Structure formats: C-alpha cells, structure tokens
Amino acid sequence: MSDTKKLLEEKTAQLEQGLFFMSKDRARALSNHETEDLIEELRAAVAELKAHANQL
Image (cartoon, rainbow, N blue to C red; front, side, top):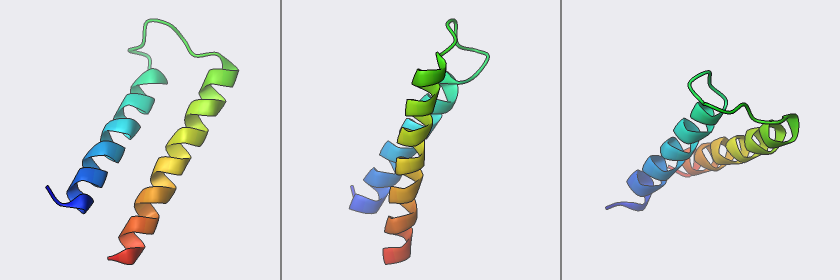
C-alpha cells in the first residue's frame, strides 16, 4: 500500500473516531479537558494531512 493511501486511511480513521467520541451516539460525555485534548489531536491530524497534501 502506498504511503499516501496508508496515511489517508489512518488519519481518516482517527478523525472518524474523534468525531464519534464527541457525538451524541457516545454513551458517556467527554469532560471539557478530554474534549480539548481530543480537539488538539484532531487538529494535529488535519495539519499532518495538509502538509502531506502540499508535498504532492
């Protein structure tokens, strides 16, 4: 599998999981601290995707 495809799959899965954790479908709500940490992780994932896209 190409590095680009692997990166896209990994980061998409990370974003999907993060959005699930913040959704109404989740049984337990995240605390403010957990939500802030998760948002920073998701922002880092998006930044990595953008950086990779700029290299193409």
